[in-house]
Image (cartoon, rainbow, N blue to C red; front, side, top):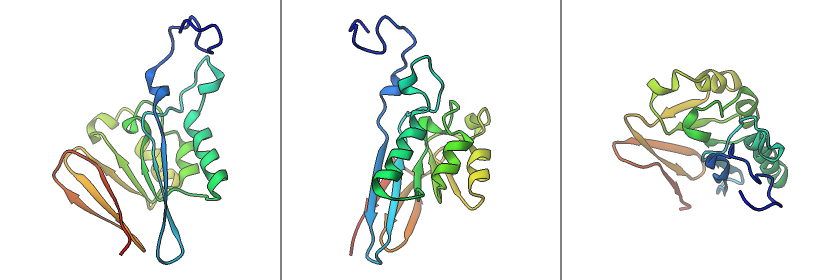
Length: 160
């Protein structure tokens, strides 16, 4: 925060969540289609005094769509554990996720409109909170998953 060239120079409002990394994965399937995955990390939709980080998740997804010529995400691991105001209706409508993993408990998420926003954006979305179980996704010609009792989220990218 001491670099005069930085947009954060002498500011104390900076939040490490803006340093988070969103990850996009495109899996080409055997049937000629692809599976699009976005792991949202702690990327935020928050408003900030620093223009460069306003609505970062929306801008990130827009860039992914443009660069990879896609219009939806199949599997979305929510930004910021599904809370913190990060999963706005605008972001959920942009994603149109089929599967949504929320690394959090349903009880804590009662404070945020995440479920409502996801359902308004796609009423068929499968919302998978990790409070009592975890999921192993297998991506081949179609997406399947199994529920496990474990500590981590797994994405198994496999081709026969």
